[in-house]
Image 1 (cartoon, rainbow, N blue to C red):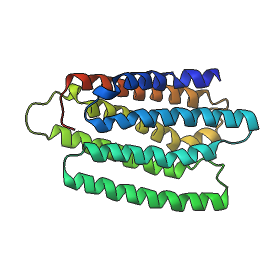
Image 2: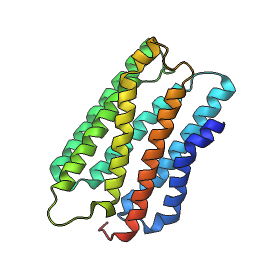
Image 3: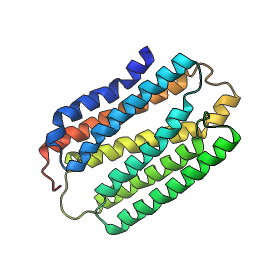
Image 4: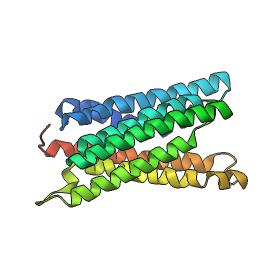
Length: 219
């Protein structure tokens, strides 16, 4: 329980701040982060309580969460992209990811059951999200005129998302090697990486929400 509280602290702080700023956030679609972060915290609590009470794998809970998590991030990039071509690409990738997720869940369920974490879905979703981050930065840097990137909420948000998913992507890429060589028997490395990446993610989210207050943008 202590680990849950400590690991959730960055999220909780960011959630409190966005709730306080809720009506002042611009553009208005950024407000959906409030509900996403609240849902994320609920999933973390439910997952922990289920595992602690029933002494069983809670992976099926987090497998269900994967689809919500990535579709949410695809949505915010769709909203932030200005060019129609990038919006269409985002829609196409989202549909492709949805189809892949359904097929992967059916395959994993038939083989190992839904109680095994679906790492292929996470890896593919992470890769698509990383690509969208890079596309966002390229489109932002190509914008005409003088722009103060530090006053653009999505600059900070996309930066946090990029670091978070690159870090997790690399760790999961080596997970088979780590397990085979017993490099993280107690899960200490995993907990450290998870907390560090979460701290970075929600700290940058918070900076993005706060930078929003000095920037007037169209909704």
